[in-house]
Image 1: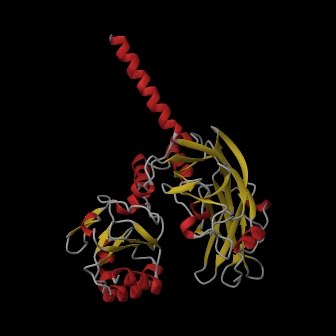
Image 2 (image 1 turned 135 degrees about the vertical axis):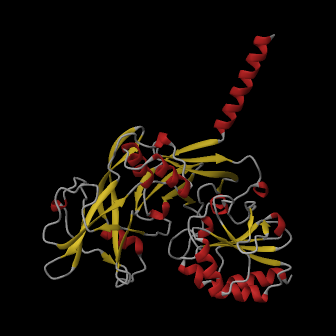
Image 3 (image 1 turned 60 degrees about the horizontal axis):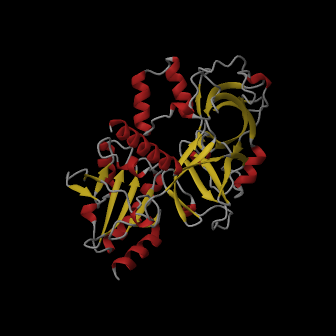
Length: 431
């Protein structure tokens, strides 16, 4: 009898495991050059007065006042390797994980150092023109690489970023970890110069595609600022697009959000770079019961304290009101620029039917208090911290991000701003 019980338990466990696996779909990825259906961002390039720890053997020829720098292609992989090499302490590594809300899957990471960084240098030529060189062949010798003038995004105002990036991209060699092996790959690197702020920036014009149930799916990594795919956005290639040929914002599905394919809903679990697959999970619940940061889905429940009064605020306590969640930071210029519009909306709206709640991330409390006082902000603010983790729960990776909720906490608009937001809210609460 005991053996029969054990056999039954094993059988049930096997059945549950197989059901769980049946919900997971792994789709192989193919790399494509360009930005595809996505808009792109650029990341800053750090520079130093001396050579970096990459230990460049030879500098560029023909330049003076040289500064060196490095470009990360996969920050998670690079940090993990520095931890293994002892360049980062265990405590420092854990702090980085915590600050990034990143718990690495070590099955995706190489246990030995690989070439994820690209060395660079820039300086003046004989005519005083600023020029740059990147270690395209990744041999730590900049004397055998082509010197070029980075693309100036201020003086060149063409709207066709895709053609510009592909025309000016430099093929560079790096190493990646795929199928448990170190693999050499060539990727496009687009370097730009922003003359107004005297800063070099870059991105990687490369995305990936896959197919499922006859639908073509595109995938981008971190808005093209690296190739880690830690934040993997996806979109269907046959969805509505804007006039510029890019997917509409509401059709770009972030990691842990949901995508509908052939009438069924799947969660975007991101990319496993080791396996080189996009991972989707079939949803068990109907859309009306799923929680996400997308229009048409229930908002994540949250609770916190108003930063000044310490009064408790939660999504549940706001039920019955239309609510605008405004995720911002004190250093975010576009966030600050939106304050006058929000102040006008708050003055016009009936606050018994509508509320704005600011969710402030990545900002010290003293600077927050100064900013609130200077701009005379009167709606409640919650500082997202390690206790409430509201920013992390909502998966916020950029500011400003706004979510407009209906009286039941369902998201009805995302990233609505300006006069359009004011008109939308006033029409809703006056019905």
